[in-house]
Length: 399
Image (tube, rainbow, N blue to C red; front, side, top):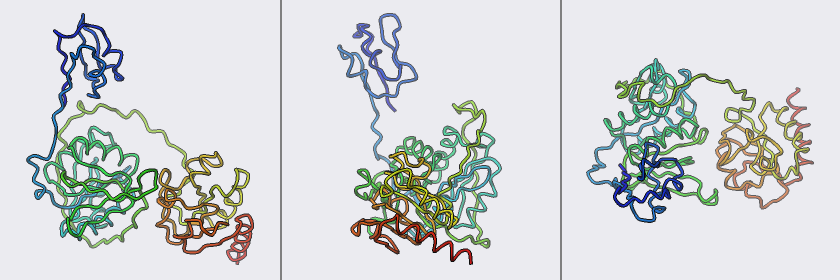
């Protein structure tokens, strides 16, 4: 915990700290500054005070008293919506199974919600040995406070060694809040997870420095080791209806009065672009030269019954909306066929599509990095190659 202390005897009432505070957490009461509940302990007021009347005390939370050997098993957060499990959770159960086998431990699901026992049974069919389940009407919809209280309660009781989450909007918010609450590390947007054979630590790999390098990160002194992983990075495991497992129930330790948000209504968003579930994606990049040339991409995608993707360069240029972007700062996809047209294949783009089953690259530069990961490469002007491919596919598919 942190504390902000104000020496009333030393305070001159100059209001320098009030003006400097970015969170409006300081106010004057008479001639003395006081702190309110908005304080984030950023320390800006300490530097601003000309008479050094403000002291910020922070309790250093180290690893003293933490016995790492107490922590066992691999956990996967089972994300769901309307009692339907998100595909990324199944993908993580498949990868979690490999991690658990490498460590010789159990694979467990962590599930929070209301009336979601069937989701627990489904997680077992996809590889979980156990599911830790907390149900409450308060957990009917995702809210950070309620879900975090439930998860922290489970983690403190059962001490998992590894916890992994989908890098979804919900997963990112949830994992980050848990990590700061229990004071452990979190690696975001991982593209690879494995167990170090010597140290038995979780090796968490993700793009770093704008995607120019791949960093492998270890959490050596804190537990659990936590990571978020983008959807479609790992393959979907096969469902086994014969599997059985244990469901362990725990209550929610807080009431509705402790939850700071309320859900008023849901607004349905029209999502016409679904890259994540597309089996064929045709993507265009900088090589298209402009918005007027995107129809050649759309035509091929329509013939193949696929979706239209794009590189960040094409999106940043305003040629196509962000919803179509594939890559580190866009969508991660895993189609059966990915056709990259006029895309050089920078590591940032590869991070979002390199797990595609078949990659077809069309680029006039034979040295383009995309050819290093392509299953098939066509060194040609895309404006000549694409119409030919489109016509040929039309002939064959019309038969």
